[in-house]
Length: 189
Image (cartoon, rainbow, N blue to C red; front, side, top):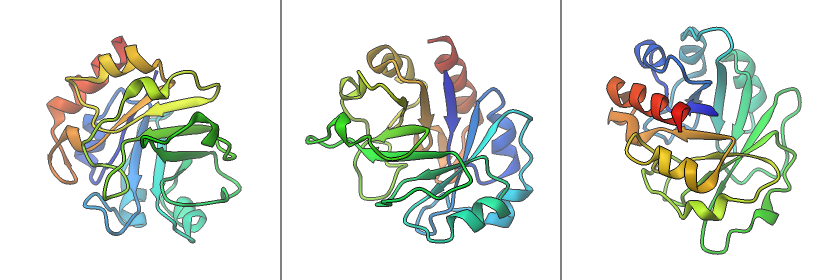
């Protein structure tokens, strides 16, 4: 199970996410979890933990990815092409008219998220059964926390899970106990 803790803004929160397979750094300036590329680059992650950059319609994604020492580019906007040279995860909002047929983007994995005013980090869930049956790698996101991650995994059987806002004590600052519990429950589901 790939476990991603997103919205990392500081070293202490990255350290608290020990055990996760990926850490997410948000490079969308309008997000309360935004981190500058040079600040992200300074955060030390354990060997083998993927450094995932979250981008929303960012034309400089490749430059930022190199500067921030990323392993994966996650596209969370309306992008129609994938940057070359990095693995790409593409996010889709699961609305009432969502169909798995939309997952035809050239990506290594797809992140399925709840719709919201912002791109991600809304704390809202969607009907997890809509994420079943994909033939591609699916990361389930949207309102996941320690209280519901095992139910979400049991329902959707995803390749991975991604959490952000429900693991925070305030926007951009993680609650370390919630982070540890989320990772433990996701990995034992």
